[in-house]
Image (cartoon, rainbow, N blue to C red):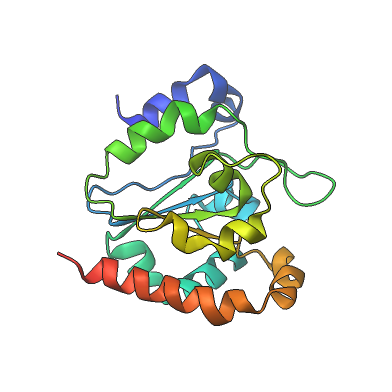
Length: 191
């Protein structure tokens, strides 16, 4: 069985499998950069293409790559803290299930031996991978991104829901995004 089939067969995912839903992730062996986000949105779950929505459009701008580079170059892998769209909450989407990353991420990451950079998008990925306290403010984590390099690069989620945050924190697009673009470019160019 493949990891994909194992994830579908996992008892924790049977509700989704029985509905005909597939886990959404992409882990090419050649990937140099791994993008770890929260969970697929509704459109991503329907199309089974990671970051295939407005958030993905902004993310590609921040990375300074086009759709072809993002999806077809083999340089990028995509996983989330959950493999399935969790459904709607009062504000935004429900959080990802807590057990998924611990159970499946090590296997998926091990399948990409060329990884050089992991971009952590949003609080769930950052708190899990950077071992942050629940009280840690994501704004502070993103501001201090340099302290997590060279392995991790934490950024805010590119969702349109974060436009207010972006307006209040112009330093992110002025200072952090250019550094992210340079890091991505350098990583892709490395042999």
